[in-house]
Length: 271
Image 1: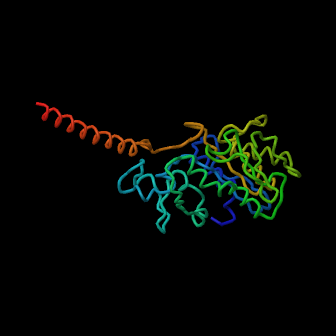
Image 2 (image 1 turned 120 degrees about the vertical axis):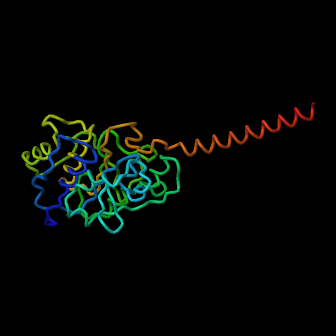
Image 3 (image 1 turned 45 degrees about the vertical axis):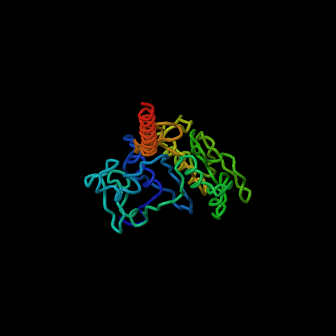
């Protein structure tokens, strides 16, 4: 596959078909815009899944989080990914793929999210947006009705005059100079009805991401998976608080045993 075949849509559709389990999305990439400027699209899978997506190799031997030799793909250089999702992206994507650990040092989910998306009170999304040279009506977009994850400041200070723009409806995206036929093509690619407007599911979230990129938006952030809890759509760690509870239970058990021994000694002395 020629590197030019790796388009934004092929990646977004690959995520939609595999990672987000959208059977209605086509697996082929339709025609992309003639000119694609530099931009950053963040598809945020809130809460995980940690095993199959970003650290499959760590759990292959133990089989934790459902990781087996049958459902991962070895991309070389120590990187293993879920075979049905990231492992099914176009071949040219593998040369640009990495799994990067982020040691934030927090147990709490909300603190961890803030550590990833903020530098103190400043938004990392806005700090990134100001580095892109191509201005657009919306420089930094937060897409769909979920918005930013819990724990992240929704109204951070502006950076170089740029603020976070919440985009919850498709008609909020100003596509200046884009033919209606091109917009219709994008909607069709993601299975979004012509009259659909609210960005409230995975298909409309990915559709909005591409429309924003076409409109020149520098940074697009979306949590596209509407599942689980509003504050944490994905979490394959079913025992997320288990170890903590186990330690607490162990401490309680030790305290109970000490108290029992103390009561026994008291009863012995009294007798």
